[in-house]
Amino acid sequence: MSVGSFGCDLRCPFCQGHEIPMAGEGKLETVELSPEALADKALELRATSERPTLTTSRWWAMSTSGTALSCSVSGGCSTSWSPTAPSKRPPWRELLPLIDAANIDLKGFTPEWYKRLGGDLETVKRFVTLAAGQCHVEVTTLLVPGEDDSVEGINALAQWLASVDRDIPLHLSRSFPRYRMMDRPPTPVERVYQLTDAAREYLTFVYTGNC
Image 1 (cartoon, rainbow, N blue to C red):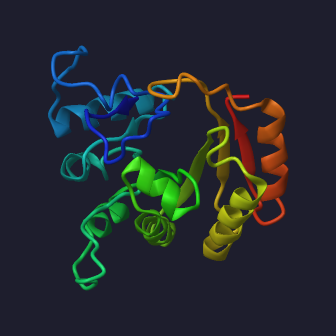
Image 2 (cartoon, one colour):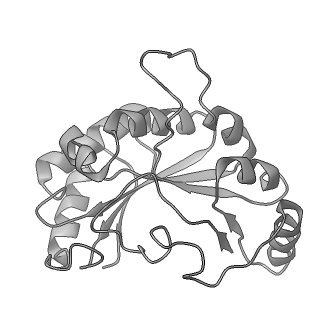
């Protein structure tokens, strides 16, 4: 069971599931649940061999995590850390001890690319490092042709991730024309495998996605 809400910190023109994060109230069918009701439903599904996953806003997740198997799916763009106020406690420090795992999107490995997406690479890197010290972490990178699919870029990403923990699983996923990048072709399957082989020079676990 995956649970989420509208909105996203980033504005990726290639968003593969833009119908949900970019949608507004009334455009999609929704169901309102209290944190307690959701936790009960997750435990019910867990008892029938399902693996419930809770993915939602921080305050709501904190109300449900700890009562069922929970995984946070995040872009890693926690905005409460500030270089001018580094002592300010990031909100994720409160949430991470309550969750079992986190899958974090690492959109690429250049500040310029993140700026185009409305985010900040260093913020995501800090979040990955913080999460890796608190729970099981996996990282996913969507390979967009001509943008973040260079061997040099993936090598840099994999080297940095290995400096955190070489056993963190990395998923390199094939992208398809979606949202505002309908003019881009799907990522060639052979390119995904090439970049996966490159990343395996630094990381123990590298997997392909959408191939």
